[in-house]
Length: 227
Ligand SMILES: C[S@@+](CC[C@H](N)C(=O)[O-])C[C@H]1O[C@@H](n2cnc3c(N)ncnc32)[C@H](O)[C@@H]1O
Figure 1 (cartoon, rainbow, N blue to C red):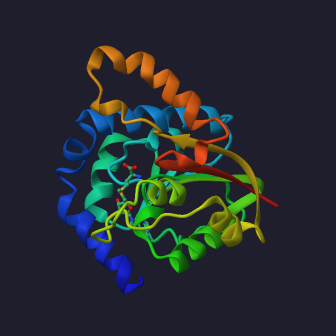
Figure 2 (cartoon, protein in one colour):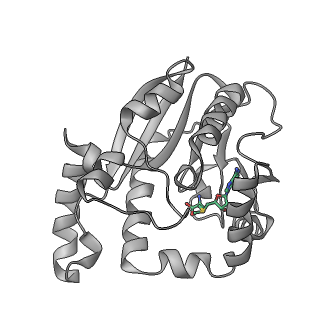
């Protein structure tokens, strides 16, 4: 595994026991979790026989959509394995999974690419292509470059430091994949609003994050279709 990526995995090994509580048991985390599930419900249409891999499953927050899951951190994956006894797990890098060619109908991954160097993201896209069946989907999220430029976002550490524009994602993937749908996540700071307003504003946020200005959402979810 690349040295850069070792740093990421060591970090997640060290925080595995607090990850769910610190990231997702607050209003921001609950909102993100809700929106990601809404998008996966829309994009993953899994008939019983279909094989679906989650890359970088972490503690298993979103593993309920998968038949197979991997993560490079054993400490994170331990939690996922306890939560999803029916899923096949393996500890591996998303760039070198060890699965046979054309194994999966669908692959998805959340909150992974934002930690990685573009060269590694490109390797993961190539690996997803190798292990997907023709016509299979690779679904992943990445912070939006347009959003960060608009807000003059200054990144102070590697954590979540990578952001890409749609054209950069296409440049990395277009030799192997066609672009399917894209979905935005979080246009407005819903989690900071009074609780009584959140439900109605959530609908507005979802509409904006899926409108022609979706590239200004915090995260963009890409659905790539293997040629
Ligand atoms: C922010 S967590 C996301 C976990 C889960 N997907 C979620 O959304 O809750 C990032 C995960 O990526 C894993 N990871 C980092 N680099 C990886 C790689 N090259 N291959 C597989 N997993 C990796 C880390 O171990 C960690 O579990």
